[in-house]
Amino acid sequence: MFERELLMIPGPTNVDPRVLSVMCKPPLSHTSPEFANILKEALENLKKVFMTKSDVFVVAGSGTLALEMAIANMIEPGDKVLNTVSGYFGQYFVEISKVYGAKFHVLEVPWGKSVKPELVKEALKKDDYKAVTVTHVETSTGVANPVREIGEVVRKHSNAFYIVDTVCSLGGMEVRVDDWNIDVCVSGSQKCLGVPPGLALVAISPRALEYVEKRKVPVGSWYGSFKNWLPVMRDPTKYFATPAVNMVYALNEALKLVIEEGLNNRFRRHYVLAEAFRTAMEALNLQLVAERESASDTVSAVHYPEGVDDNQFRSEMKKHGIIVAAMLGPLKGRGFRVGHMGNVNRSDILSTIAAIEATLKRLGCKLEAGNGVAAAQEKLLSLTK
Ligand SMILES: Cc1ncc(COP(=O)(O)O)c(C=O)c1O
Image (tube, rainbow, N blue to C red; front, side, top):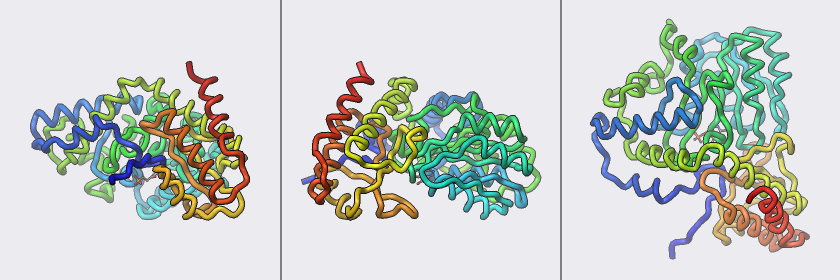
C-alpha cells in the first residue's frame, strides 16, 4: 500500500495537487512564445512575493546556487565581507565567500539567538565592507533574524551591498526587498512556496545590478552570472542555458496559489500555526532552540527531553505518517525540527502535535498526552475567527 506521508520537515514541503498536475505536461520549447509567457507570468508574480519592482531571476538549481550567485556576482577577490552567522546556514555564506576569495569577517552569535542590529553596527564602524550577509530564517535553529532592522543599519552606516538568504522565509514571512534595502535576496522553491526542489530564486536591486554590469573582474561563475541570465529574465524568448521548463510550470502555478491566498493572509496563517505549535511545545515542557522573541513562523527546532533517541523518535513519528527532520551540526541527535510552512494547515499542525505526544509517551517520557493538542487548540481558537 502506498503510505500517505505528511512532510513536516523544513523543505521540501507538501506540494498542492494543482502544482503537481501542471508538472506532468509535456515540456514546451524553452524559447517558444507559449513558454515565454509562462515564465514572464511567474517572474511578475515572483516580484510581488519578493516585494520588488526590480529584476528577479529563476535558475535551475537549489537554494545554495542562489547563495553562490549572490557572492559570485557581488564579490571580487580581496573584497571584505561581513558574514553574520547564527547557525548552520549562515556558515554557507562564509564558505562561499572563502571560495570566491573574499576577506571575510564572521560575526557569530550562539545557536538559538538572533543577530542584533547593534552588533552589525559595531562591526560596520570598525571596517569598510563590500557586502554584509544575513540569513533571514536560520533553518537549523528556527531563529528569524531582524532583516529589516539590520537593513537600516547597513544602509545608514556603510555602502555595503546587503545580501539576504530568504530560503526558509520567502512566501511564509514578510520579505520586502525594496523597502528593507536588500541588494541581493536569495531563495529556493521547495519551502514556503510549496514547489518541489529545483529552482534558485533571486531578486536584485538596481544598484547591485549596476555594479554587476560595470565590474571589471569577470564573475567567477559562468552559469551563475547575473549578466548572462538577465537578457532571458527580461525577455524569456532569449536563450542562455535551457531553463527547467516543467519546474517553471510548477513555480508559476504555486505563485498563483500564493497570490490567490494573498500575501498578508499567508503570513498570518504561518504566524497562527507557528504560535499554536510553540504553545503546544511549552505545554509539553519541551524547549525550543530559538529564543521566544526571535522564533520564526516557518520552522521550529525542539530539544528532546532526557533519554530520547533521535532515530527512534523520528521512526516512531513516521509510523504516524508524519516526517520530521533531524537537527543539524552541533545539535544533531539532541532534538528535532518541524517545518510549519507552505501548504500547511490547522489539521497538519494538530496531528503533528498529537503524534509528538504519542511518540514521546511510547518512548517512555512522562507527559500528559493531550496537553499539547489542547493548548494548540486554545491558541488556534484565540487567534482565528
Ligand atoms: C536558510 C537556508 N539557506 C540555504 C539553504 C540551502 O538550500 P538548498 O538545500 O535548497 O540548497 C537552506 C536549506 O535548507 C536553508 O534553509
